[in-house]
Image 1 (spheres, rainbow, N blue to C red):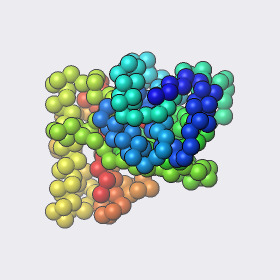
Image 2 (cartoon, helix red, strand yellow):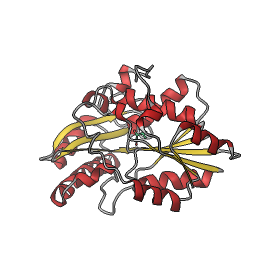
Image 3 (cartoon, rainbow, N blue to C red):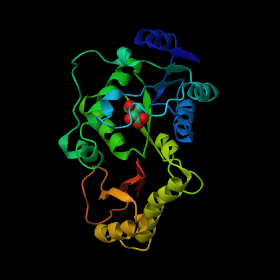
Image 4 (cartoon, protein in one colour):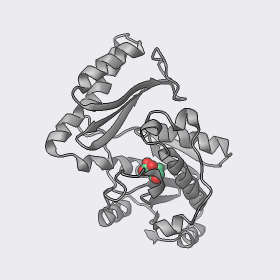
Length: 273
Ligand code: PAF
């Protein structure tokens, strides 16, 4: 595995490869969820590139940028054993200059839900993903459905900017008890980890409701809220694939999302139906 720390090193390494490139952009603290993205990239491409870059522009002032988990040694090992060909591990200077042009997320999808709680977050995500795509020039890029809004906005950016990359959505990976894997789970103490299960339980309740024929969004939201008690819930949303709020679940075109704080840790999860 080649570890590239600058854009030149990355592009030299890529120039030596032939065929398709599967790309998995990450912020490190890799877990089984990332492994599933890397495995899919490995299966479907000639070369696998993973980036590890904790992108400062997607954190708001006061968020966890400085304490975001950093696990260089373990991450490198995971990439190595997963068959990654090139690991791109730039520092902030390799990625950003002064007073740069930025990508802005659209108001309709970029400043609601996650974007309302974290205004400007998606501008930072889209900007860094645009940079990474231009550096790596992947054939396919792999993103988890857990970050549903991010996935939708990246797909829209690729379309709007006529970018030549296929976005591959990957299912959320969960612990045996339902907790969605997230790098932020390390912040949870054992008691909070138990509390956090209410999030996936609320989505399970929503799925059961739909299976029993209750498609009414308000009624489903209320049932989910009861399961989430007494967590500090930021939002429960029922939207279509374009992130427009819908009054009734439409099978094949609905995402139900939750964001809640468990202690000081903010967690998100969702179910696609
Ligand atoms: O999902 C993430 O880990 C990040 O938002 C991403 C896509 C790597 C951009 O920094």
